[in-house]
Amino acid sequence: MTVGKSADLTKVEKWLPRNGKVVDGGCVIDPVEIAKAQPQGRQVVNMENGVDFSELEKVLPPIVFRNWYRWRDVLPIAPRTVANDDSLGCGPKEKIMVGRVCGYPRNSLLDYLRSKSRVVKGGK
Figure 1 (tube, one colour):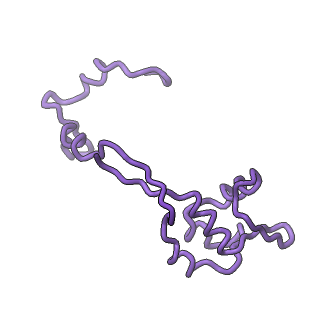
Figure 2 (cartoon, rainbow, N blue to C red):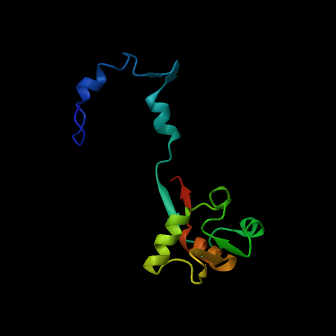
């Protein structure tokens, strides 16, 4: 099979068991049950208040520097992503430079995270 082309279904079908169930690591998976379990559609809803970041606000220091050792443990976005958005002019509104290290005030970073977040509701 080559990359970029659609798979030939006759080749795939001969690897499937005759009862229509796929065996994955000793588990029998029914494709019909999988299709029923998956959400049929998702609706993206932009809420005016966004996501509640009150617990995150308690953990963050007053100024969050990009080289903060707990950044990846606490924040849901990579520091390079924030840096790239900052260079494009769509990052946090305020920035503090200490030498070569860039940091953001807590409230400014939280406002940025609220603008980047969205609530997704699934189902029909």
